[in-house]
Amino acid sequence: MIPRYSRPDMVAIWSPETKFRIWYEIEAHACDAMADLGVIPRENADAVWKAKDVEFDVARIDEIEAVTKHDVIAFLTHLAEHVGSEEARFVHQGMTSSDVLDTCLNVQLVRASDILLDGVDKVLAALKKRAYEHKDTVRVGRSHGIHAEPTTMGLTFARFYAEMDRNKNRLEKARWEIATGAISGAVGTFANIDPAVEEHVCEKLGLRPEPISTQVIPRDRHAMFFATLGVIASSIENIAIEIRHMQRTEVLEGAEFFSMGQKGSSAMPHKKNPVLTENLTGLARLVRMAVIPAMENVALWHERDISHSSVERGIGPDATITLDFALHRLASVVDKMLIFPENMLDNMNKFPGLVMSQRVLLALTQAGVSREDAYSMVQRNALKVWEERLDFRELLLADEEVVKALGVEAINEKFDMGYHTKHVDTIFKRVFKD
Image 1 (cartoon, rainbow, N blue to C red):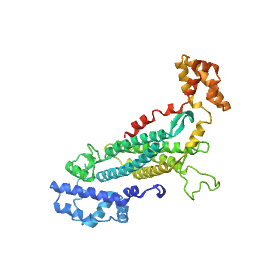
Image 2: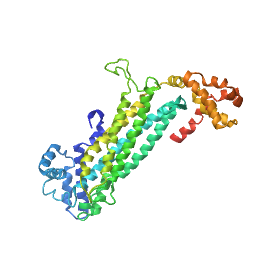
Image 3: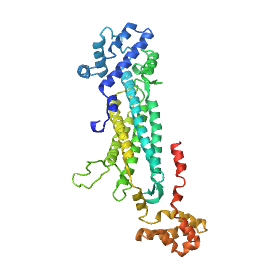
Image 4: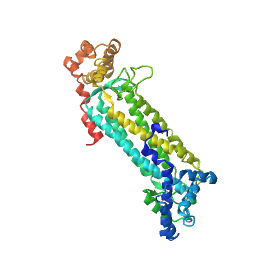
């Protein structure tokens, strides 16, 4: 991923240096296990650990691979240069390249998951803070982009919190599912290596042994992992689009923080554009790009092919690095965003009282009016509010048929804003559970 949308900790997981370090640990732990089983001499296993502080030379490995045309063989050749050819002769015994590649990839994805979970926690903290801050800040709810009924800004943040909390749960499960390793040899039968070696390596790397591998770890695990990243990205976009809509000039109920010296447009000095949340929408698309290829990787020929390999070399780093950046950007946007309660009330009152139409409808039906007649009585007055910007309550009070059915006091009572916020505390208890 390009540096503009990258954070160093996540980038480091996918560096060649990190990859080769994990490869080395897999091979060294495997040698230890084989020595414990008496398959190889203990002194050879111990000799491999001479390279434990070595910084493997990426350029040198690339140079060897240019000849061998095989990345794992190139690494093993370079490892022997540090350990000694004779000492390293039992390295990789009974193993196949995928044992190293697949186990390493899953170690990287587990580490990436931990960083992503930290990012999700930062988003959750920001959403929770803003939810409680604006628990009772009334704003109009919208369906189809049209004024519906009153809600609160706190409930808006709370529903995004609940959504992201579900994503945390999904990511924890995806992390668990991807945390397997395989040291099972060619076609996964353990013919040339004892299953105890796999158990030892996985324990040392914080993985579980893959119950049954072929020559690769099954790619349905990876498909689920990247699908989870795609869902999280969509939730990020969901929040970002709400903020973008709030920042529209005609709405202006909330906005991204605009820092001192920031410029919104090269042509129009007055502009304050929602560039960060627009960026988040774009980044979400990039993360979701990984989902379909990951699913297509599930179907491999027989015990293996490598059609998945080139895909994963791209989507592994790109999806995790991009999502990591997006989570931290979103947390910052939510934490710093500006909220304009006065504009929320002004927007609600652009069509005075109109958002109370359902209360009047229900009251009429409870007063004995048929639903069809009640709907007609309310709608004829509501349409005048739309068309002439008149006050809905005044229109109802001037409608003899409505007054006859409800009475003046009952009509006025239907315009109490507290009616719509009376269960906010109940919803918050459900969401935040504290």
